[in-house]
Image (cartoon, rainbow, N blue to C red; front, side, top):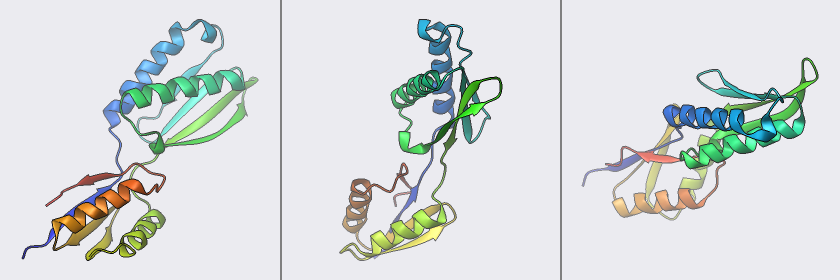
Length: 163
């Protein structure tokens, strides 16, 4: 009997993130409560977003707008790692948000241990920033997928290459 397998990955759609950022920027420029606050959202193109404004409250409000737009674009909020709101230059405040991509080694080990503790006959191994799960029974693999979806590992999970 052939081996069945799937990969567990943690990815975010960069285009949807850009769309959500554009929508958030547009809303911030048109909303009355953001007028003359100097609020802006910048994105370095890959892994971090920064919110600048003249008060902590406006930074938090801009963060709420951004989170709302991310949810509407189906970008998991687990992919956003928010930093603290900190004072910046010229009596302004900033907040850095990091986009989490891939499964780091520690989380992969935790997930591997979790899978080995399940009552199914499957093998799992770390492959870079993903996790490969193999087994003889597709039913066992589907049970592993369901268990991984039910458990919260703090990152968004997708299941690819199901064969």
